[in-house]
Length: 426
Ligand code: UDX
Image 1 (spheres, rainbow, N blue to C red):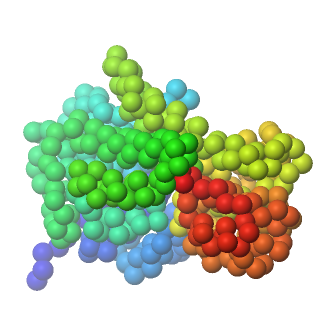
Image 2 (cartoon, rainbow, N blue to C red; image 1 turned 45 degrees about the horizontal axis):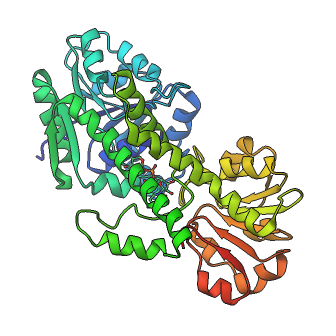
């Protein structure tokens, strides 16, 4: 008889928690997943998936028998010894991470017994140590996630690396966590808790730095007549640099980069170190989000009374996540300059509605473009490439002006068709 697989506990069934639960179930584990949101648990129990993530509904459906959703902690503690903490840690006003949800989970483990808390939530360096000071018997393993929205399942099942941090008293539990990932065949980084926590923050901060760096190169390219896409291609072939995360555009957004860069800067500041580079990375990103407005003004002059179509609202394609999305900053900026904003996104409209109260939300790209003085492409959804730009779009727009915030459209074809085309850094 095959050996029974380690049962898993997941606490916090948001995006990270649900992906984690579904993927461990896919690997053959029984998973007890707990969330305090009764409605969410009821929907999950009915087999509904409340978030947009490609492949997730299929994975949840395929593994229904192994996935047990609950609002209570007791069944999780009863069935599983490894408790993956996946609650969110949103930023506070000061930029520190809000750990109240993590604290709430810890308080429910008052008698830690033979369980281990496995931290997937992104937390400041030192969180593990401080939790262990308060609950000395608790076994604690740091196991940060590196999932990208839109490809989270692929990222979970085919990771570049698995990071597992534990101090000497929790090594046996860390071994059990490592065993869970063994079928994936990925390199495993075994380290101490503080270093594991830092690997997560430093990785995201480095990637954000790469983006702000290429965005500044793009801004200089515009001044000196170089093309940032060509520059990135030439740079990326250097193995020490690598080709990824060198796409210039309208700034990074989402639920991780802005929060984690800020959190690392804040963490350094709290310990008396001024992280100069990250201060610049954040400033460059904020300016980059606004720069597209200047590109519009170059061609339209004053924006008072002008109609601007925003193509894309989500912070990146294949997600309905609008957190820290460039579109929101841009819409506010355009409106304060006197423009009317008409926005369209294939999936993020409903989520964006409360945040874009003064903009018209359209049901199609063409509806947004009809009568527009200019179009701004903010999110590189594939369907925007497939629009009939030379025909229908050109006919319905009042003026054929396109600002392509992601260098996504066919510049030469659009210019040949009579559009005024502005990209980023070219
Ligand atoms: C990111 C990390 O990649 C992931 O490892 C971590 O766990 C969570 O944060 P995600 O937020 O889903 O994942 O998005 P990602 O695909 O990494 O893109 C982040 C932002 O950077 C997007 O706004 C994207 O448009 C922007 N970006 C990315 C660029 O502007 N240029 C690039 O070259 C790459």
